[in-house]
Image (cartoon, rainbow, N blue to C red):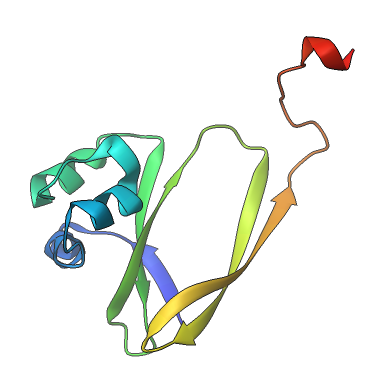
Amino acid sequence: MLSVRRRTEVDLSTVVGWIPDAGALYFFTGPRLVWPLTIEQLAAMDADESLTAWMVLDERAQPVGHFDLTVVDRIARYTYALREAGGSWRISEKIVHLINDRVPTVLDFYSI
């Protein structure tokens, strides 16, 4: 069974080691970080109070994944179902749970 815990300073070198090239870094973070990824870049992300970083641990409590959560607006929560495939974990299902029935949108003039 997988578990999660907050990322700590000790985890930074592990996460850096998982990113093999610029393409993987862009897939991982978009334009937020630059290649080559450094421990300092990841550590600097901790200053952003809207972001929390998490480690995914396997049944032996060994790190097998990493993800960030960013609070933009609380409109939904997400549930992910994971499956093991070829020695790694993949997202097999994503469920969105709306917190309320009002989701902020931009009204298109032509839809009036």
